[in-house]
Image 1 (spheres, rainbow, N blue to C red):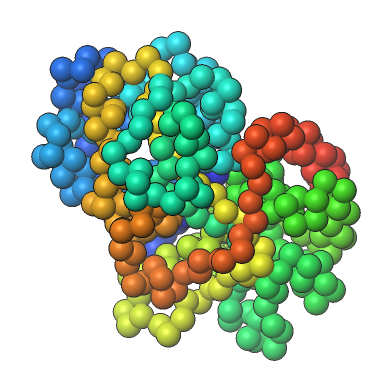
Image 2: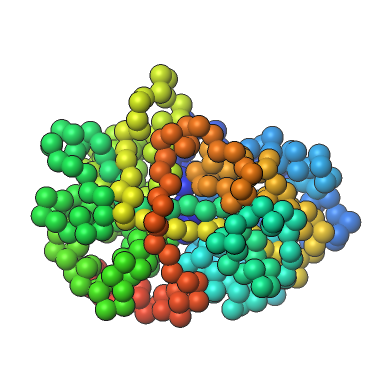
Amino acid sequence: MNTSLRRALSAAAIAALGLPALAACGGSGSSGETDGGKTVTLVSHDSFLASDSVLKEFTKETGYTVKIIKGGDAGQAVNQAILSKSHPQGDVFFGVDNTLLSRALDNGLFTPYQAKGLDRVPQEFQADAAEHRVTPIDSGDICVNYDRAYFAGHKLAPPQTLDDLVKPEYKNLLVTENSATSSPGLAFQLATIAKYGDNGWQDYWKKLKSNGVEVVDGWEQAYNDRFSGSAGGKKAKGDKPLVVSYASSPPAEVVGMKPQPGEAPTGVATGTCFRQTEFAGLLKGAKNTKGGQALIDFMLGRTFQEDMPLQMYVNPVAKDAKVPEVFTKYGARPADSAALAPDKIAKNRDQWVKTWSSLVLK
């Protein structure tokens, strides 16, 4: 899910939990190599993670070494790719999601490529099935998370829906991210637009503001500093028991715990979610086209797909990929996450964010 799909836990949160960070495979060569070169360069957002052993498996299978260039959150990375499209930084871009997809496609970032393994991906994830300019790689849900201990201690049922969040009993309890600077913040705004429509979402946000919602710039600040239920929050003594995060955040709080608890210390309000899909694409002008195609194929393969849940805390899109038990046991997979068509998002996103800013930030 950066970002928009800065989705899943970021590297900062993983570090706070004591989990291993990505050991990116470097190697001799650069993104300037030709099809005969042995390096393929992946451009992505800061939340990209993959096991070193998985990247080495790609090298073993194909002969190509992966070089990774990270460029901030998903929005920043996409904007940089657009600015540098005449001289692309690499061969493959990973991390454009359905909230940013039309921007990337309208700017002609990608060369069409029909990846091997697409027959294993449900049609619901194939947003560009007609032209194959991008390939779906993962999906995730942006949702309100809650601190179980807070609600148990206050003998208060945690909220489950967007309607719940504006009730008096939840006044001053929620922290969210700025829609203009954070992909989870934007996704949460899109969830309210999908729920309440073009004529109702603004009134909803007026109620949410009156109910004391706090807005911060980004996910790390919201989750690690302000949220009372996170590993980072315990250090920072955050006092907000509700935060906009991911449906897959609870497993990240549990991984590494010994013994593992019966349930995660955080829960998911499944009636507040927005579904995101992340894509990879072969950058137009890539100097290692064959290597880029091989990398996209590999990212759809089971080895990479099954590595993602506990690396980036996202769901694989391949139907035959197995998900770790800790991910399914402690995470949530909302059945009715909100969604909006990418073209509608593209047409209205800037105005929606401008309107949101004038309503909430002033």
